[in-house]
Length: 230
Image (cartoon, rainbow, N blue to C red; front, side, top):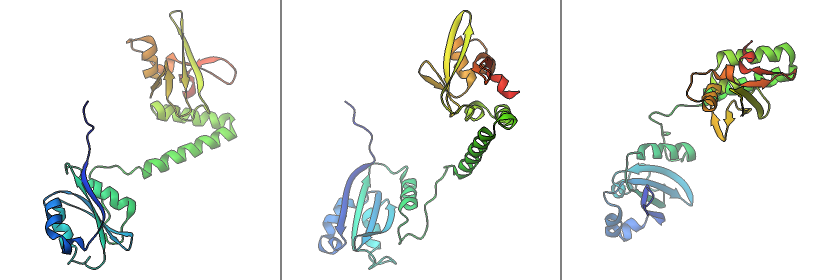
């Protein structure tokens, strides 16, 4: 049996700061030269969060720098490795926003999803309005989505709930489900595009999912998905 990878190797939680005066050698021996995350508390409330490659030295400094007298207890979390420590500290700072920290943490490569969220909410609102109005408005909305988008984006919101799609090919009937989120379910697998699901059904041959799959229209006829683009 192999052990699972872990980050925290040792920890001390909610220890009085006076331990540095009463038992300096013990504390120094336990955490000297070790890296990790630490937290400072004042009267039971979180005051400051930081990280250090030498926790003993950092905590000792905080007893005489600008934080002196502003904390009375501390916790330390000694880590096995430190390649992600900076981002871990940033994550903690952004979540809890301690009073003693002046700078909010940043991420090296993370993409802010707020613009995408705003865009997707606008698309969802437009889909909802088009469905409510119906008729030519709904048809134009569908056509715009299916011609400008790809995969999930093109098909999301086309149906209100999971809907059967099918195709008879070489005498065999293939059935899938078009989901409200735009994904296609076929034989227990989810596909991000109609072509991906069509290739799973028809084999390695080149095939367009928009031409392969049929969806029942409002008149009850089974028509190719590409009809949504007209």
